[in-house]
Image (cartoon, rainbow, N blue to C red; front, side, top):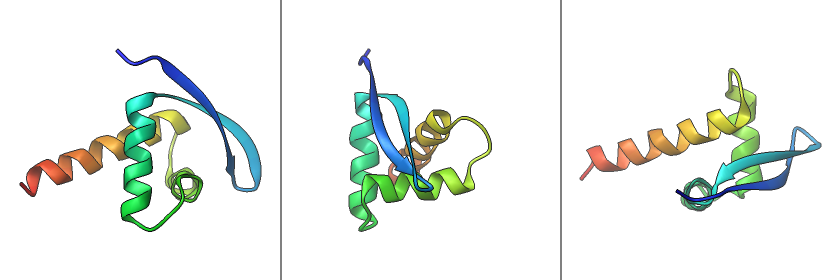
Length: 73
């Protein structure tokens, strides 16, 4: 299992820290790149739509994206 990494991000104009395992950070970067966004921009978008914990919301976005890619194979 990958260790949890805490990173500082700007969300809604405020600096906050988010803890995720490295593979989730890597997939978030890939999702952001595919959408032509920065990781911070993607996190801000997810933050505005979330209900609950930000780290959990980010993991769920990664899971949804991976599921969508697997279905399209």
